[in-house]
Length: 422
Image (cartoon, rainbow, N blue to C red; front, side, top):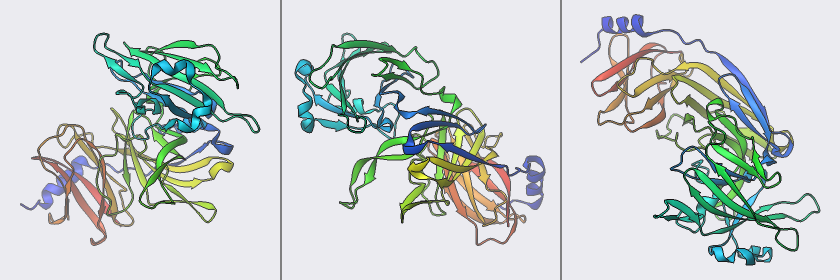
């Protein structure tokens, strides 16, 4: 049934308040050779810059029922599985490096580090049903490049166990001819409340303060390992260190690249922003300015639209980007656990993004419809129904310039927003 002009006019007067377009420029400096990691807060454009080589391994600390151990690949470290027999501890030799298996952090989940990708059932160890602990069965070797003209530094590591939210691990350093004395440490999840990891340095032989509290940052500008297209074998990938952005576990991000982009939930992946907002051609970087990222903090209605504008490369590590920070998802939910908003509004090119957050999956059909002021349906599309944070691009170039109403409907519930096409 058509919407009446009176109904739409009423919706306009009750619901609409103009979003002033406020755009600010963000900038971070990672330094020459990407020497620094930068944690960035979109709300106040504040950054925390920390030297990337201050830590070596990091222990996931969010839950006693979960674990994860990452290597500092952004600090140029590598980790290898040297043996899956813990009894080989005293006989490990750096001369066998060619026979070791290199392991890499996941760029999809924070709690899947390189150590968790070893050959044991839990990566570095096996579950003991009697003690309810994970006991180490794998021997690793961490390799750090030496300074110019100096040999690499090696540290062998075994994770003894993880139990009750506490990691116990043992390591020994290679002095060039032999391994030094074994050192055993414990790292409890109770350390550094509010942070995602506890960071450990083999240099200081202690925990280091590296990461701000998770609720205080949104982006981490860093180097990390990803599966990169293999130029020698098209269609395959190789592990490769790239420079890009990883996201806080406290945010959801939706990515929009063009008007035909597939709508999918990427928010659980920590590298939604990643590295491919830029390409290296002809000796310089080109920014993919048609890629937008919509960032929503957990338990917040504020959505930030981020668009990258400049990348200086390894000379300075400067990255510039625009932040639109006035958008909010509808305070009135469409249905329980479903909210949405529209960007940009007004639209100068008649292409808009409907960004919506579904926190409770249901069987109800979700749809997007656009009405003229006479109540005629001029556009209709299906929206996702599964849990996730989405950005759905609508190409409305076939419509005349003017004012319309966009309806987001979930089952028998709906909300409307005025949109302006210029």
